[in-house]
Length: 182
Image 1 (cartoon, helix red, strand yellow):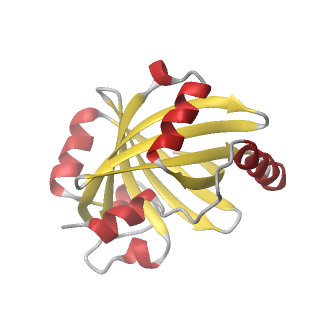
Image 2 (image 1 turned 135 degrees about the horizontal axis):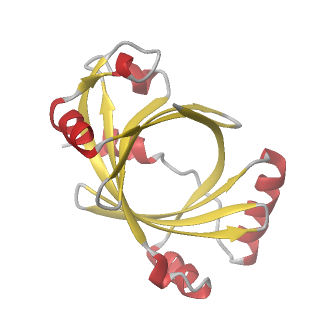
């Protein structure tokens, strides 16, 4: 199991802002697709405890399960790589989280989100442009991941100001699935 602390800043983008930044940063040819499959228990234990439980598929055959606990200064993540057959079975049938993490809950798939992502180094971190597609909805987001909260906050705010982007509250990708679930 791999663990890390993720410090990120994000804001929603308008479609035009997304494509303008994509062109400006010359990232049009670097887009890759990842699909996030979100899970929770019948009693919504993970949502109630501000934990994201997902399986992410990158490329054709790479899968990992992640438990992500949120706080004001970042997120604590635990990752376990999965083989493709195991991941597909878990997506189709659900699973018990005790096999991977310290929580003993039976979970099932809530929904999935396709994220068309590009990234580029920027100052002291990594800048991401996301085009998210789920339940017939497409939205756009700018993320900035760093190792230092204060430095990252300053760099992100400077980037937004320089590109005339308003900082607005961003809804977590997992929460978009909860609120838009059919």
